Length: 192
Image (cartoon, rainbow, N blue to C red; front, side):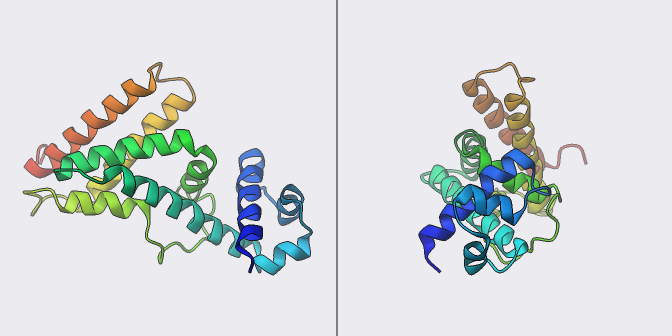
């Protein structure tokens, strides 16, 4: 498989998904957007499901690398979580099509994609939560990470649709505060 052809198809698929939605897109529409024939598309991807699985891997690895780079140099797990949260917000702004596709997969719009074998961006959050001192026997790390990720997704959504009439910098500061509060509450067992 020629990587450049496959990448062009994946990028075209992101555009089509953005315009038509993840469940309404067709391979014919993707082939047309990529400037290839349907048979050429099938040489790279055996089915729509294969294309979507490859697209999810492409998007999630892009986000994973982006977040990992943003978190480098963190001195504490809370700082790492904050950098990951702000990184997720910035990724959504800088890579909106990839972010929307990842969210669509996790919102079960594309529930037939098997993502269990992938190294996922959420794994970075879980690892940072697991590194928080005093987490045992606190809530499961995946639950705390999910709370933080969900909060960031809410900020992204409200910012994108204009309900959070805040600047990007204000959103980033809010994410940092939220991450700190969730991390501290989880470590201390606040609310139990």
